[in-house]
Length: 513
Image 1 (tube, one colour):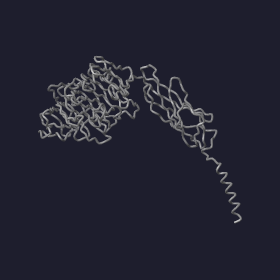
Image 2: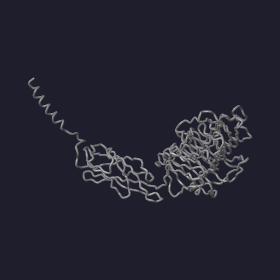
Image 3: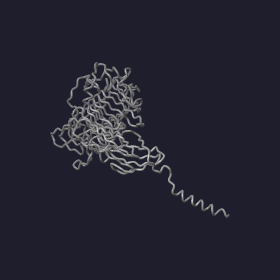
Image 4: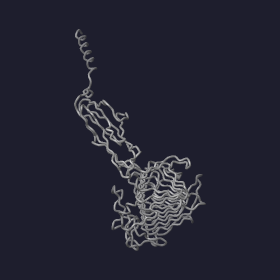
């Protein structure tokens, strides 16, 4: 027992000294450098005056002890980068401690100023680190692009034509407009016309919409030499979301779409690509006393159209590539692909689809809706069914996808329901028969010349097999070298790529020759 008290004294002294000992990784050393997860932080092309996405820069201390570092922006002329260091916003921070074998997260973002040029431009800066007398830096690189910005823009002067030039991109951002009582990016008033120059690029912010009560003219009068595919590419007007990082290249539902109201007339969309939206084009006219909205579509691509918001401009309709309510739509040489709900959906009106390819694959989920759906009935605001006359002319086309019934004809026995589907390759089980049955027109009748027996069109590549689909036809495709249906319609002289259809008596179904 007499030894216990001295032992207790010794242990107490040891505990006293231990409380003052620092772990090795907390001891600040006076030598050593930092490492970084990259040598430069690069931003994809960003539009001026709009804040970029936030990028991460990881800073590593590979030393066993802690180091102190000073972090600062070089602040080169003309740049507006900003930093968040250890959660604090600022252009610099002094004496930042990084424990041994630990890391520091620096967030970088920028707002690029307008420098009045129409060409993309490069803005560089750098983040400097001074650690134990060692100077290190990480470069910041952004490609800027000036643009025309449209936010809650009203084009209301009847009889006036507004022209969107092609020298700079156009960026559309929704803003609440009291006179329209809705969030609107661009509103074309009744009697006004919005004309888009060939080759213009339109980028739409999340949810942004274009609403047309007047007329929209895109490449309405352009005439290209058949076979000049380069000229066709240059002339193509492109609509997409404003997120330009590669990850967003094929993401649907990034913006609202183009909407035509009941007073809209004489619309033309030619040589155009509309992608990554909730709706491609939506024509909504429930006014039985007004003429149908009309739209001509020629050489138009609808790609990656889908979303969860059906209530843009009060439609209440599910998203789709072409949505029409009591409207007249003439579509030729059009491609509709990767539409998550519908490629084409019509409620009354006239739908003339000639030499169109509907190749609707949704590899990321199992779609349970037909790509092409028609009905002559729609519920009004009170939920009561309202019927409109419906005319369907689907000719010389391809309707295919990964659902066993890609064609839906609702209420087709109604006397005001006219169906003319000829010389078209269809994926359908409901309408394969050669004779008509109750609510099931026999689209397999030999006189109609349709291909309806699960005959694969043999596209070159689809989204099921490639990240770069190609909906041209293989040489052995059953859709090639067909005798076209030409009653009251004509065979276009070119295909979607502006290549000539050399033999109009033996041509390919769909948008591609």
